[in-house]
Image 1 (tube, rainbow, N blue to C red):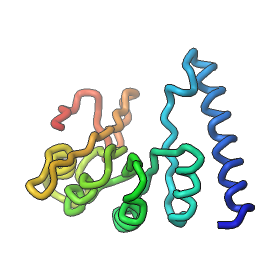
Image 2 (cartoon, helix red, strand yellow):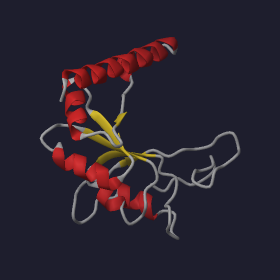
Image 3 (spheres, helix red, strand yellow):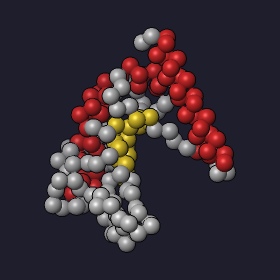
Image 4 (tube, helix red, strand yellow):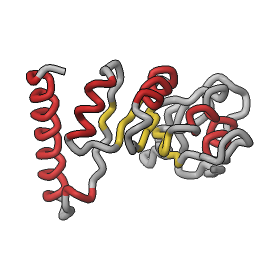
Length: 157
């Protein structure tokens, strides 16, 4: 990796940390209480290694295939992986094998059982003892998008 690329990543990360610190301070919190998740969609593994060297430990992906390749390539590092986006039920158990947290699990996309994907993520499979924490979007203002829960929806997992 070039020194120029390394400096660009360091500069961008420093700027993000500065904005997070300012926002946290404005709300009466310390910036150190906020977890920055670097979503690395389409970025090469070399960038992730550089970011790891700069202190980043939480990385996010929104495509299972790309995440799976990066997880394997970076298995020597202690990282916390996040899956961001919709989870297809046929990929949920495989995502739970590497993702510590799955963001925006609202419903199962492309399946008839709307609890299939969340269940596959939160209950360890027979092949792996891992499960993932899930975050769900809840619309409190009343207008509910088809892929999110209303405040009255049951939380099954």
